[in-house]
Image 1 (cartoon, rainbow, N blue to C red):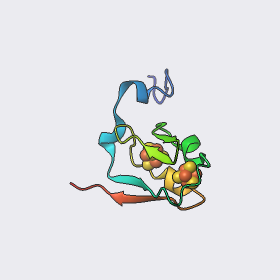
Image 2 (spheres, rainbow, N blue to C red; image 1 turned 90 degrees about the vertical axis):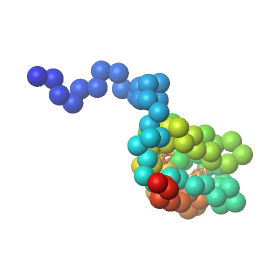
Image 3 (cartoon, helix red, strand yellow; image 1 turned 60 degrees about the vertical axis):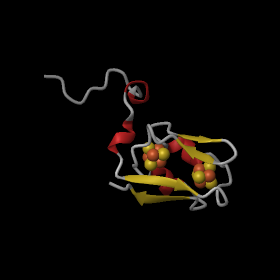
Length: 83
Ligand code: SF4
Ligand code: SF4
C-alpha cells in the first residue's frame, strides 16, 4: 500500500481551482498594505500577487487564513463567505 506520497508536489494550481473549498475569504485593506510581500511568500496556493498592494486570486484562494496571520500590518481580514 502507498499512502501519503505526493508524486508531483505543488501541482494544485495547475490542476484545480481550489477557491471552491473556501468558507472564509481574505480581504486586503490597501491603505494598510505596505507591499512587504510576506503574504505572497507564505500563501500555499500562490493566490496572492503584490503589485500596488496585495491582490488575491479568488479562483485559487482556499481561505486558509495564513496570509492574514503572517501580515505584520494587519492589512488582511478573513470574512465569512456568503452562502
Ligand atoms: S503581508 Fe500584509 S503588508 Fe505585506 S504585502 Fe501582504 S498584505 Fe501587504
Ligand atoms: S487565505 Fe490567504 S494564504 Fe490562504 S490560500 Fe487564500 S490568499 Fe493564500
